[in-house]
Length: 104
Image 1 (cartoon, rainbow, N blue to C red):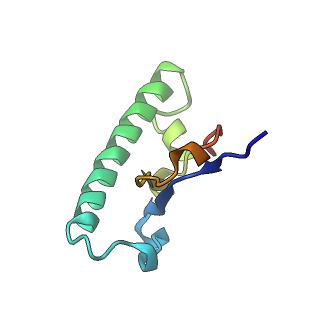
Image 2: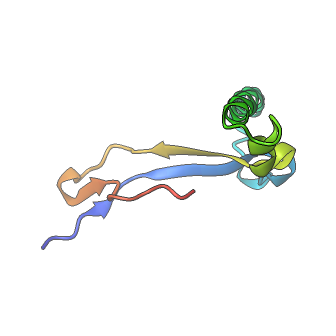
């Protein structure tokens, strides 16, 4: 059958820990991006730690920090991927994104 091509682009980077960010790929032309990512990743990290604490407690694990620590603790990695699907001049030739599963 006819092969359909993927049409899209994406931005990917590690957000935390800060020393793992590849600043050569960081969008410096967006002046508020760094501040927004710092704030977002801080709040996301707090939410993650809270949920891990609840799960650890209700699963009867050794400590409330068991799941958080097993996930990397302060060194856990948070990543960002922003997908972009620009207008396609020949949409009948593309599928957008092929069936896939996200990596863990």
